Image 1 (cartoon, one colour):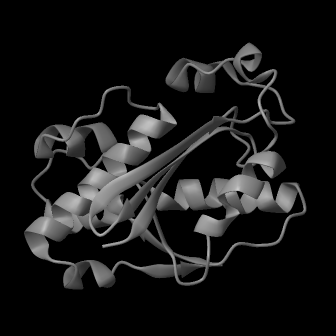
Image 2: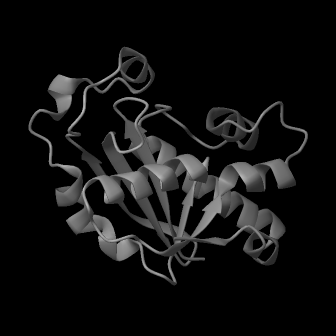
Image 3: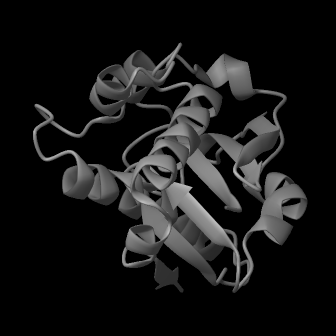
Length: 178
C-alpha cells in the first residue's frame, strides 16, 4: 500500500492560513519518510488556533511561505497518487484554498478520509476524533495537533485498517480531489 498522509494546521479560520504542513510517506505498507515545515501565512494568527496547536506568529517569522513549501511537496499531489488525511475535507480545503490564494495551479489527486473509514470499521468507538481512534487502536499520538504527529497517526490508522480489513474495502472510500 502506497500513500501520503497529510496534516495542516492553520493560523486562523481562513482556509489559506496554513502555518504548518506535515506529510508521512508510506510505500509498500511501511512509513519510509516524513516531511514537516512551518509556514509563514500572509494573515494574522487567531488566539484560539494558537491555543490548539501552539504555533505562534513569532515561530513562523522566518519560515517559508506556502508557495516555497509547495515547490517541495507538489510532486506528492499527482493524479494517480493517494493522499489521506483524518478529516480530509479540512486538509484538502486548506490545500485548495492556499493554492487559489497564491494563484498556483490546482492539484488533482486521489484522496481518502480516515474519519470516514474509522466510522465504517469502528462504529462502536465513542467518537472518531484522531486522538480517540488512536487511543482505541493503541496507536501512538504524542502531540495531538502537531502536524507531523497527526500525519503519522493518520498513516498508522490506515495501515491498521488495511492490515485488519484488507485494501479492497478501503477502495470504496477513495475519491478524486480536484
